Length: 143
Image (tube, rainbow, N blue to C red; front, side, top):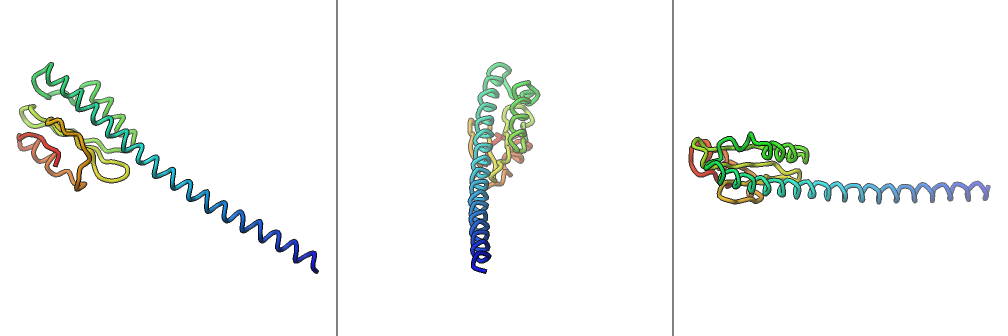
């Protein structure tokens, strides 16, 4: 009988150790998942800054931003942003003198880049001005 209790105690200890290891494994998994999302945010912000630079080169060459969103560079950047789980939207005002580009971020909120050389995380998480101002033929601004 004493031998049987000893075996039961060992199995109980083994099960407790397995449970503790599973708990630590879960914590590590969630820790890496958050880091991965923040890395995607950083990649999106880098791509949006790259887009801003490319748009300015296009503007110097063409005199406006009309047609920029169809360029190979802009298409590649939009694909890269979507690959990082961001949603990409390009707004151009009617006369082509201004643009605003927004992307959702995996951790929440938006990244916004505009023709006023702003490239930043949107503070309130709602990009109303970006779309409205561009469609009203005003200067396109991140809000």
